[in-house]
Length: 224
Image 1 (cartoon, rainbow, N blue to C red):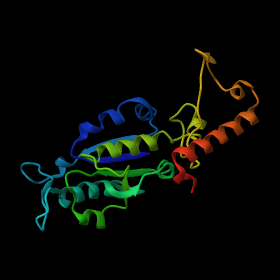
Image 2 (image 1 turned 30 degrees about the horizontal axis):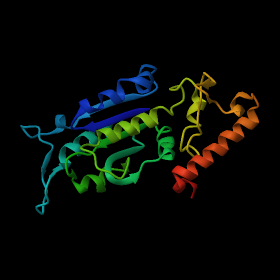
Image 3 (image 1 turned 120 degrees about the horizontal axis):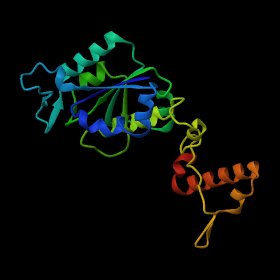
Image 4 (image 1 turned 45 degrees about the vertical axis):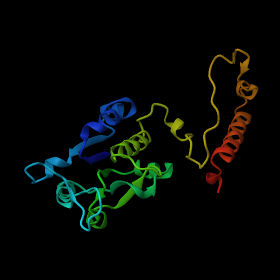
């Protein structure tokens, strides 16, 4: 997989792509991540990539010219499965979306910033708009980091125990059941006996029941 990230603040992506699981995925050549500074594609002598909004609305707007320039350059070099724009009014990002993204070969992510982006970018250059929650961030780099991490970890070979990702929360619209480790008894707080029984079928059923109950209590919307 190749991910091309377009941003006005490349440094904000450093921790997302240079540490932990994503770093190991890059070292294994399972994913390529290229960060493009949008200012490098500005023809303005001050390298500005924003301007005032027509109509007098407060806040600055990301300009179409440098965005079109970098996306056009990338698309001349290869085909892309999606050109994603991170924005608070996009579709809500879910595990099923991450699952699908992990099967793609090439993805562009444009990080939103300022008041927003010239609507013509959204109308003509973007194929998908993603929101990571019903709140506003200073910039889309944090949202892009979420997409990168949640997608890359699903690529075969990235996680040593690949089956563990299949049982993460939201994979089957259920939250994950409780997990325990040694010691089995700590200050009188004991691990449920079923988990120590060695009876796989019973353990699996217990985990499923716990997941259903936890989801019903905390996220009843998922049960729908």
